[in-house]
Amino acid sequence: MEAAVELFKQKFVETPEDEKRTHKMGEWILRNYHATYQDQPFKVLSTEKEFCIPLGNGNNLIGRIDKIIEWDGVTWVMDHKTTSMLGASYFKMHTPNMQFTGYTWAAHKMGYTNCQGVLVDAMLVAKGLLESSSRAKLSPLARDFAFRNNDDLDDYITHAWDVQEDIKECEDDGVWTPNFDACTYYGECPYRKICKEPKDIRERVIKMDYQVEHWDPRNGEVKVETA
Image (tube, rainbow, N blue to C red; front, side, top):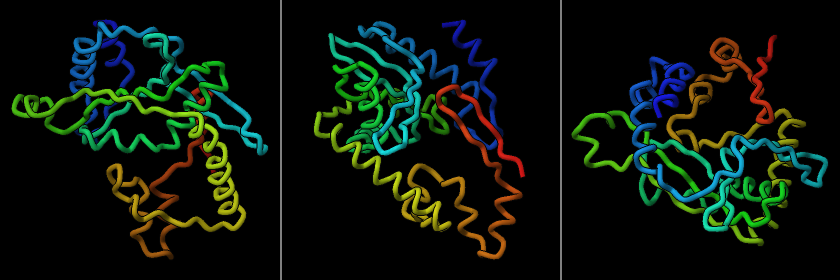
């Protein structure tokens, strides 16, 4: 535990504008997580599992899975999530959910054919959580199983193809339709200020305030696009 805390302090870089993700909060979550789950009876089969799997339409599904575990003879993808609102309604968003269905589909393709879905390992990250008055009211840790059946996995391919076709059409046309209903769905969208600006200055805002980065989940490399 002490080694994990020390490594976290060395690797994690705080950002001044984020009052919820701090060294103090991270250490508290690590220690609380260890105290809560140290006796959980599952076996870790793989961690940070990268994959690149053909989808059958000329494209690949590329990603990285946090953990693949075995619990009572059943295989699960285990995905760690942080949220500012942790409760019963939070877990509803995971079924249906394209990301988790894709993880389960990928696990099957990698040979984990007994994978039943995703064990969502959620951690509350909220401003004021470290205050004694808040701790008694909030549950900072919770888990839930997001099951997937064979029909879900069969349908995933069709849905993935449709999404990729939509992206290709937008790229070919050079027109991207914004989803304004999602502007504040998971907190404020980082691109919201672009949409709020007049059209004639949006390109200038993008060049001044944003940097294009390409992240490859297979090796964790980040490449910065230069002008």
